[in-house]
Every structure is written in C-alpha cells, then in structure tokens.
Length: 272
Length: 262
Image 1 (cartoon, one colour):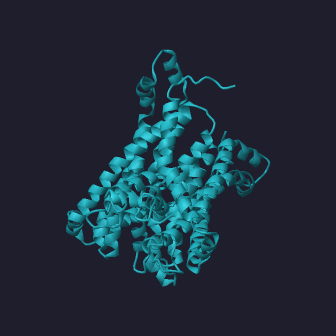
Image 2 (image 1 turned 120 degrees about the vertical axis):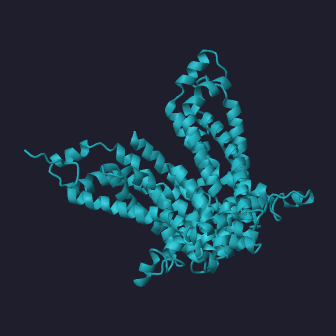
Image 3 (image 1 turned 180 degrees about the vertical axis):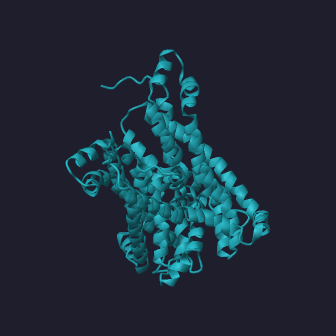
C-alpha cells in the first residue's frame, strides 16, 4: 500500500534532482562510454594490453593496494588510541586525521615531494639507508597512503565508539587475557569496518592524480600511473585511447563502488 | 584492595600505543602542512610577498574565486533538492539515486575533466557546433566551472542527507497539518534546523572547489594569466623550479584546509 505523501515538494525536487544529475554526471559519463564504444574490440584489446598501459595499471593497482593495506594497519592503531585512551592533545590529533582530506591534492603533491626528495626532511635519511623514495614507485605508495589513511580512521571510528565494554568484561571474567580478548573478541568486530575502509582508500587511490604526479617522476613504463597516462594520451590528441583507458578504469571503480555500498549497508545494519 | 580494570591495557602498552599514534600523525600528516609554510618562507618574507603580489598569481586567485563562486551555489541548490527528496519521501529507485549521487567519488578527477572534453572539446560531440558559433568552453572558464561542478557534486548532498535523515519529518508534518505550504515549511522549519550543517557543507564544497587540481588541469589548457587556477599556478611554478613562489601560493590553499579542519 502506498502511503499518501504529506509533505509537499516531491515533484519539484524529483524533477530538479534528476535533471541536474543527468546533465552533470550521467550524460557526460555516457559520452565517455560511447566514445570508447566507437572503437572495435580489437582496438580495445590493443590499447589495454599495450606494454605502457599494463605497466601503468600494475603500478596503479599495486601501489593502491599496498597503500590501502598500510593505511588499514596504521588506521587501526590510531583509531584505537583516539577512541580508547584519554590524553592531552587527543582532540588535536583527532582533527589532524582529516588533513589529507582537506589539503588540496596539488599542495600535498609538491610538499610530499619536497619532504621525500633525496635532500628533503625525511628523504635524506631514507637516502642514507639506500631507499629512493621520491621519483620511484615508493613515492607513489607514500602519496597514496597519505591520501587513503583518513578513510580507514573515519570508517572505523564510529564502530569502535559504539562497542560496549560488556563483551570484553564477559570475556575477561571467563579468564581471557587482554591480548586474547582483543584478538578473539574485539578485532573480529572491526573486520567489516576495516574492509570498508580498505575499499574506500583503494578506490580513492586508483583515481588519485594531483598528489602523485609530482612525487612519482612520471617515467613511462616505470613510475607512470593510469590517470597520468590518460592525460598523456590527451596531450598527444589520442582522444579515443584516452577514452578507452578511462572506461576501463571507471568500470573497475564502479564495481568497487557497488562493493563499498554493499559493505556500508551491512555495516549500518550491524551498527543498529 | 587494588582494583584492576579488565577492559584496558597495562600503562606500558597504553603509553607505547599513544606514542606510536602521535609519531604516525605528526610525521605523516602534520609535517607536510608544516613543510608548506617552511618552504614558502625559506627565502624570506619578501620573496613570499612578491610571489603573491604578481599578475599571474592575481589572475589565478581571481579565476579560482570565480569558479568556486559559480559551482558552489549550483551544488548547494542541488544538494538541498536531493536531500529534501531522499529524506522526506520513500520512492522506487531511491537507493539507486543515492548511489548515483556518490558516483563522482568513484570517478578519477582526470576522467571528470575528460568527459567534458568529449562533449565540448574540438573532437567532441558539440565541438563543431560550438566552433561554428565561436563559443569556447574547453580551455576556458566554462570548462573549468563544469569540471569543478562535477568533482564537488556529491559533497554538499552527502553532508546534508544524514543530518536531515536524523532530524526526521515530525516537525515538517506538523507544519503541514497547521496549513503551511512547501516553501514556508522549508524556510521556517527545515532551514533553521539544518543551518549549521548547511554552512559546513558549503565550506567543505568550497574548499574542494578551490583546491581541485586534476579535473581542472585537463580542461584548462594551462594558459598563463588566463586559465590557470591557483592549484594550476602552483604546479606551473613548481615545474619551473620556482619552489618558494610555488609554496607561497600553496599556503593560500593550505589555509583553506585549516579553515575546514577547525
């Protein structure tokens, strides 16, 4: 049975929302798919399996996965400290987590490059132990970890805050040590949030451009990421192959978005 | 008898974890922000001021402000409409609509620029039509605005929807029974309830609009003094090895981030 709508404005907001959404998002994305579809499967295959695209894809997905994994580990530790412990400066630290969200990507890019370059604040020490951070895949990984980190913390935080102490107390009365309680009781409850955080960080990292292109050095086949490759194709007026690479990337992102949506819905459900 | 709490760690473990967290956050997150300002003033305040008091910097700031001034209100209006729609009504396709609003989050900024090239660029759908009428969208202000609108599209709506969802519809329904019309309900009942969320959403959307790099970079054409926004100007300076000037302009963008975080 459909309930009668009491509050007015359904038609107006539906119309406006759908038209604006179509004009700004749907039609432009369709233009991308159609442009890519203008090429045959053979050409698609040729573009997507060219050595340069494969090298860029390997770097993009590899560095994104590594960065999201490290973000997950660091994020778990930081969230635990922020939620569980009281200490001076906790609120400032909590506000700092959002810095990568707030700092424009180009600013993050040039700053991280300056810090991790061989003469930089951190780079000089890494250089001494033989690690070349900037202008190498490690630089890409560093930038993507910086970008992905807040996603993990902000996904995990509400789950951790809502976790009652009763279960832990029960486990302790049954004789479990603190480490066992964490490993067997608390940690399993964080797993869905951790996976969601990982997926969010990973999805963001794949498309990231501004913070990476300065620190990566952009050497074809070596430190070139997929979004940069799209820009390179555009600069060479190869608009079709730019569209094909973009469509490939976008398809993967959309699949990730669906997975994330599913995970978040489960998380909300568990939350209640 | 000494009470031993069972739901916390020993002081040693606790101290160790807190130290680790502080080190991670300062080294990894705070230091870059700090570095922006140090690098900007490395060659003194005079160089810093000179880098900002310059025609190319002025025009970049102006362009950034114009692009934000157009795209933020557009997305605010959309966000209000979308939030009203999905929080006041339950209808078929509501979940699908919510996912579509999130879509730009999943799109690389570079692709957000590319789609406009495909529509309005020289080789795009409307390219020839626009060229005949001498209308320039790509490599000009309209393209920059479109790219910015695409990228900042979900921010405001995402901020508002949970807030309006949490507040429920009781007050609005009461207003209806008292005979108020839609606009009156919106202005007198809903708006006062969401004003802080509204302000925060605008700030968030604005910070993102002014800082956007990838999407704008694709459609701007990098014409110095004409189509370079502030982040693009930073890039140009950096690539010309004018590091102090690049970081001086970057401080303006970093300040935006600080406004948001506080």
